[in-house]
Amino acid sequence: MSAERVDVEQKVLSANDQIASEVRGRLAGHGVFSVNILSSPGSGKTTLLERTVDLLKPSLRLAVVAGDVQTRNDAERLERHGIPVQAIETGGGCHLNARQVSESLESLDLGEMDLLFIENVGNLVCPSSFDLGESRKVVLLSVTEGEDKPLKYPAAFRRAGVLVVTKVDLVPHVEFSTQTAIENALSINPDLVVLSTSSYTGEGLDSWAEWLTGQVTECKQGS
Ligand SMILES: Nc1nc2c(ncn2[C@@H]2O[C@H](COP(=O)(O)OP(=O)(O)OP(=O)(O)O)[C@@H](O)[C@H]2O)c(=O)[nH]1
Ligand SMILES: [Mg+2]
Image (cartoon, rainbow, N blue to C red; front, side):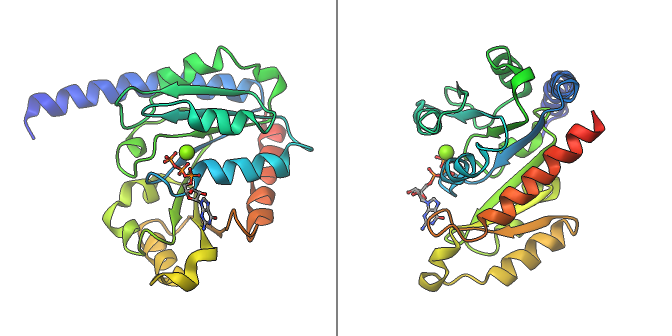
């Protein structure tokens, strides 16, 4: 890679980091815990969020920023669950950036929010380099993707605080060892909290909801 290109990339990232840090400050000021959800296209981000919203809506004030290259489909799916949602269409961009999130927050009432989900563009590479000001990154890996993905796309797993292995209802139908996938992920990042879920059967969703609720409580205590 040329020195010039490296220089431009570093400038873009450092401008992004500055806005991300402002976003982080705004969210912290309102005691909002936020998660930036990363995964390959179709790993089950929106479906997991739909189930999670149904589980947590009675006890927490939720909102979602939903990023996609094109369409408002995910935002519309989530809106049907009765929470505030902002869509970001990147128009070709393979990741969200902090400015887009910052602008979306203008249309959301942070004073009426405990937990903000940011669904990133489906991509296991680009989104991991861009801090959005979130409290935690959460990476999803579905059982149809292969257990080697943490080794092949390590950055997302290195930067995440939580790994959610999704679609575990499909394990009997695919050649996938959940244990090997988790070992691979932990070899990249031994501090990962690991959960396994199925949005179809509901398996593991209680643990996921419990983790989120615990983080919201800690965040409120710290603010
Ligand atoms: N078997 C099974 N299928 C699932 C599960 N969760 C999601 N799916 C299916 O996987 C497909 C993709 O799910 P989405 O939730 O749209 O995935 P996504 O990660 O939001 O996709 P993008 O936003 O396009 O990256 C859909 O057909 C879902 O019904 C699950 O737990 N088990
Ligand atoms: Mg989606």
